[in-house]
Image (cartoon, rainbow, N blue to C red; front, side):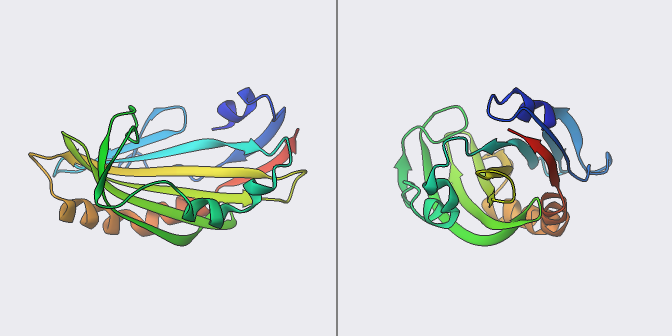
Length: 181
Protein backbone atom coordinates (compact mmCIF):
# COMPACT_ATOMS: atom_id res chain seq x y z
CA UNK A 1 0.00 0.00 0.00
CA UNK A 2 2.73 2.46 0.91
CA UNK A 3 4.67 1.88 -2.31
CA UNK A 4 1.50 2.28 -4.36
CA UNK A 5 0.73 5.59 -2.65
CA UNK A 6 4.25 6.88 -3.13
CA UNK A 7 3.96 6.19 -6.86
CA UNK A 8 0.87 8.42 -6.88
CA UNK A 9 2.21 11.75 -8.16
CA UNK A 10 -0.07 13.67 -5.80
CA UNK A 11 1.52 12.25 -2.65
CA UNK A 12 5.24 12.67 -2.18
CA UNK A 13 5.57 10.72 1.06
CA UNK A 14 3.55 9.03 3.77
CA UNK A 15 3.85 6.54 6.58
CA UNK A 16 1.08 4.01 6.84
CA UNK A 17 0.13 0.49 7.49
CA UNK A 18 -2.47 -1.96 8.65
CA UNK A 19 -2.65 -4.99 10.90
CA UNK A 20 -1.28 -7.88 8.88
CA UNK A 21 -3.66 -10.86 8.87
CA UNK A 22 -2.17 -14.01 10.40
CA UNK A 23 -0.55 -16.23 7.77
CA UNK A 24 -2.74 -19.17 8.78
CA UNK A 25 -5.79 -17.17 7.61
CA UNK A 26 -4.58 -14.99 4.75
CA UNK A 27 -1.65 -15.33 2.37
CA UNK A 28 0.08 -12.24 0.99
CA UNK A 29 -0.18 -12.55 -2.80
CA UNK A 30 0.98 -9.16 -4.08
CA UNK A 31 1.28 -5.48 -3.17
CA UNK A 32 -1.70 -4.77 -0.90
CA UNK A 33 -3.52 -8.03 -1.74
CA UNK A 34 -4.26 -10.84 0.73
CA UNK A 35 -6.09 -14.08 -0.05
CA UNK A 36 -7.85 -16.87 1.84
CA UNK A 37 -9.32 -19.99 0.22
CA UNK A 38 -11.73 -22.00 2.37
CA UNK A 39 -12.23 -25.77 2.36
CA UNK A 40 -15.41 -25.08 0.34
CA UNK A 41 -13.34 -23.31 -2.37
CA UNK A 42 -14.57 -19.83 -1.46
CA UNK A 43 -11.87 -17.24 -2.12
CA UNK A 44 -11.74 -14.12 0.04
CA UNK A 45 -9.53 -11.26 -1.18
CA UNK A 46 -8.57 -8.12 0.71
CA UNK A 47 -7.27 -5.39 -1.60
CA UNK A 48 -5.73 -2.36 0.11
CA UNK A 49 -5.59 0.58 -2.27
CA UNK A 50 -3.26 3.48 -1.53
CA UNK A 51 -4.71 6.78 -0.37
CA UNK A 52 -5.55 9.26 -3.11
CA UNK A 53 -4.90 12.93 -2.34
CA UNK A 54 -7.57 15.49 -3.31
CA UNK A 55 -5.03 17.60 -5.21
CA UNK A 56 -7.62 19.78 -6.98
CA UNK A 57 -9.64 20.21 -3.74
CA UNK A 58 -12.69 18.80 -5.53
CA UNK A 59 -15.73 19.28 -3.24
CA UNK A 60 -17.48 16.16 -4.55
CA UNK A 61 -14.71 14.00 -3.06
CA UNK A 62 -15.81 15.16 0.37
CA UNK A 63 -19.34 13.88 -0.25
CA UNK A 64 -18.55 10.17 0.12
CA UNK A 65 -22.10 9.26 1.15
CA UNK A 66 -23.70 11.04 -1.81
CA UNK A 67 -21.20 9.51 -4.22
CA UNK A 68 -21.80 6.02 -2.82
CA UNK A 69 -25.58 6.40 -3.11
CA UNK A 70 -25.40 7.64 -6.71
CA UNK A 71 -23.49 4.69 -8.15
CA UNK A 72 -24.94 3.76 -11.55
CA UNK A 73 -25.46 0.11 -10.61
CA UNK A 74 -28.88 -1.33 -11.37
CA UNK A 75 -30.23 -4.23 -9.31
CA UNK A 76 -31.89 -7.12 -11.13
CA UNK A 77 -30.23 -6.23 -14.43
CA UNK A 78 -27.12 -6.90 -16.46
CA UNK A 79 -24.66 -4.06 -15.83
CA UNK A 80 -22.20 -3.42 -18.65
CA UNK A 81 -18.47 -3.60 -17.96
CA UNK A 82 -18.58 -3.73 -14.15
CA UNK A 83 -16.60 -6.92 -13.49
CA UNK A 84 -12.93 -6.61 -12.45
CA UNK A 85 -11.96 -7.56 -16.02
CA UNK A 86 -14.49 -5.19 -17.64
CA UNK A 87 -17.12 -7.77 -18.57
CA UNK A 88 -20.87 -7.61 -18.02
CA UNK A 89 -22.33 -8.81 -14.70
CA UNK A 90 -25.80 -9.48 -13.34
CA UNK A 91 -26.33 -7.55 -10.09
CA UNK A 92 -28.67 -9.20 -7.61
CA UNK A 93 -28.50 -6.65 -4.81
CA UNK A 94 -26.64 -3.60 -3.52
CA UNK A 95 -26.44 -2.20 0.00
CA UNK A 96 -24.80 0.77 1.73
CA UNK A 97 -23.77 0.84 5.40
CA UNK A 98 -21.53 2.81 7.76
CA UNK A 99 -18.00 1.56 8.35
CA UNK A 100 -14.68 2.75 9.74
CA UNK A 101 -11.79 2.77 7.29
CA UNK A 102 -8.30 3.59 8.59
CA UNK A 103 -9.82 5.20 11.69
CA UNK A 104 -12.20 7.47 9.75
CA UNK A 105 -15.97 7.02 9.48
CA UNK A 106 -17.03 6.17 5.95
CA UNK A 107 -19.15 3.66 4.10
CA UNK A 108 -19.13 0.11 2.83
CA UNK A 109 -20.98 -0.47 -0.42
CA UNK A 110 -21.92 -4.12 -1.02
CA UNK A 111 -22.63 -5.56 -4.46
CA UNK A 112 -23.93 -9.12 -4.83
CA UNK A 113 -23.38 -10.23 -8.41
CA UNK A 114 -22.56 -13.00 -10.84
CA UNK A 115 -20.96 -13.46 -14.22
CA UNK A 116 -20.92 -16.52 -16.47
CA UNK A 117 -18.56 -18.41 -14.15
CA UNK A 118 -18.64 -17.13 -10.55
CA UNK A 119 -20.86 -15.87 -7.77
CA UNK A 120 -19.34 -12.83 -6.04
CA UNK A 121 -19.96 -10.51 -3.11
CA UNK A 122 -17.88 -7.32 -3.23
CA UNK A 123 -17.57 -4.92 -0.29
CA UNK A 124 -16.07 -1.52 -1.20
CA UNK A 125 -14.92 0.38 1.91
CA UNK A 126 -14.37 4.12 1.37
CA UNK A 127 -13.67 7.04 3.70
CA UNK A 128 -12.64 10.65 3.22
CA UNK A 129 -10.00 11.91 5.66
CA UNK A 130 -9.79 15.71 5.82
CA UNK A 131 -7.15 15.84 8.55
CA UNK A 132 -4.35 16.76 6.11
CA UNK A 133 -4.36 19.46 3.41
CA UNK A 134 -7.22 19.04 0.95
CA UNK A 135 -7.95 15.58 2.33
CA UNK A 136 -7.61 12.13 0.83
CA UNK A 137 -9.68 9.04 0.13
CA UNK A 138 -8.90 5.66 1.69
CA UNK A 139 -10.23 2.56 -0.05
CA UNK A 140 -10.24 -1.15 0.72
CA UNK A 141 -12.03 -3.81 -1.31
CA UNK A 142 -13.05 -7.21 0.05
CA UNK A 143 -14.26 -9.78 -2.44
CA UNK A 144 -15.80 -13.21 -1.70
CA UNK A 145 -16.23 -15.49 -4.71
CA UNK A 146 -16.42 -19.04 -5.95
CA UNK A 147 -17.17 -21.10 -9.02
CA UNK A 148 -20.88 -21.47 -9.78
CA UNK A 149 -20.47 -25.26 -9.93
CA UNK A 150 -19.02 -25.39 -6.41
CA UNK A 151 -20.59 -22.67 -4.24
CA UNK A 152 -23.87 -20.85 -3.61
CA UNK A 153 -24.62 -17.28 -2.57
CA UNK A 154 -25.65 -18.67 0.83
CA UNK A 155 -22.16 -20.13 1.28
CA UNK A 156 -20.59 -16.80 0.30
CA UNK A 157 -22.80 -14.98 2.83
CA UNK A 158 -21.75 -17.50 5.47
CA UNK A 159 -18.07 -16.93 4.73
CA UNK A 160 -18.58 -13.18 4.84
CA UNK A 161 -20.31 -13.45 8.20
CA UNK A 162 -17.56 -15.76 9.52
CA UNK A 163 -14.76 -13.31 8.62
CA UNK A 164 -16.67 -10.05 9.19
CA UNK A 165 -15.34 -9.08 12.64
CA UNK A 166 -11.73 -9.88 11.73
CA UNK A 167 -11.88 -7.93 8.46
CA UNK A 168 -13.59 -4.93 10.05
CA UNK A 169 -10.85 -4.77 12.72
CA UNK A 170 -8.10 -4.97 10.10
CA UNK A 171 -9.71 -2.30 7.89
CA UNK A 172 -10.64 0.07 10.73
CA UNK A 173 -7.26 -0.06 12.49
CA UNK A 174 -5.09 0.97 9.54
CA UNK A 175 -3.23 4.26 9.83
CA UNK A 176 -1.87 6.90 7.45
CA UNK A 177 0.45 9.54 8.93
CA UNK A 178 3.18 12.01 7.95
CA UNK A 179 1.61 12.79 4.59
CA UNK A 180 3.57 15.08 2.29
CA UNK A 181 1.79 16.39 -0.78
